[in-house]
Length: 448
Image (cartoon, rainbow, N blue to C red; front, side):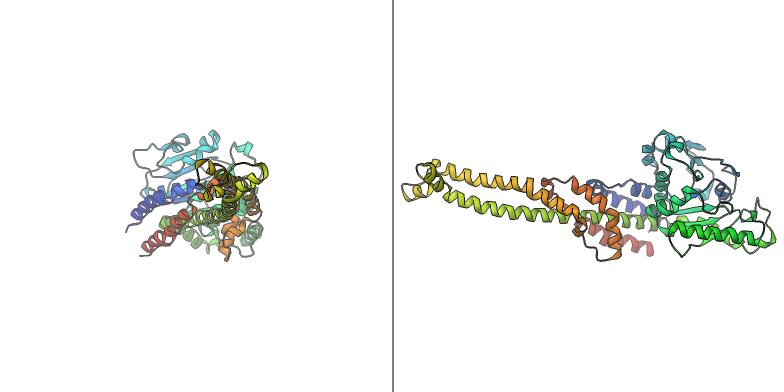
């Protein structure tokens, strides 16, 4: 089956079977939905002098983005081929209101971001099936007030969508930019897989000699280890633009790095369906562990309800049978108990009124005790150690729970006693069936 057909079928299946469950558990489905509905994306990020625009122009084969040592573009620019029915440049206000595009979710960041978002429609067959997103240059000291929106949060949303993220450095600022640190340390690991990120040090032709190059490279490696917290440094591509560089002989051994980088970027569309499946797998597993926790809490709540209910019923039956005997001995009411009536002429409706009051009153009291004491105590106890709601027997499960614990606790805090009868078990079965049957089927189709 062609990949585009698989993607369409998968999108329909997820929207029908899984999307409603994301809504039930107040989990964000928008990033998964937007990821399925559009074309492969390559996200280019880096500080303002890292050569992002130069690389993009080289990939496209013509000068689309302005280049320069100083900041030249402070917008998120989507570059793709949307066909002749689109104008050459589409403003952000149009993008965030087009349901066929994956940018609707950016509306929440307000007008400041909207005015710094646009799409450039280029006449290129290659870009009919992919898009490149250029980003504003990262800065060393900035705040949300400076940009007018939360740059790191927006960058994270684009990173979720991307099939490949190219993080660029220049040899003069080898990983020392504050926003670069935040991106590598927090934003990218949380929003994207490590296999989707490649690191590039560009403009290496500006190094005076091989020693200068090695010094910059070593500085970048050291900074990378500090930013990632890891000793094993990922591969860093060393490259330059031959169109604008005066390449010395010392760099004759580096052109293959540039070719490998270009091949990796152009191969990104082939990873699209696999990435969609990975994203669905990850987010549905997150949904599953939340649903699993809620299902277990509901099971414990219903068990406590049955326990209190059985005690209440036993006391109620006892009072039904003998309560009026007790009141008769104490206050001479009623004149004839139900048991004495049974021994005599028979039970009338009047003989049943007080026993029934005792029975249903005891059951009602049991319900009040459960709602106001038993359920609240169970909820407090659960919130103090919600991790015991789910099985954490593997590292994957522990990491998954650590990520979703806060979401689960928020759902628990908003849970009422009546919610114990929601269909969590049924929802959990649907999720498991999707993961074990549907998703495996699509993985098999991808391999075939």
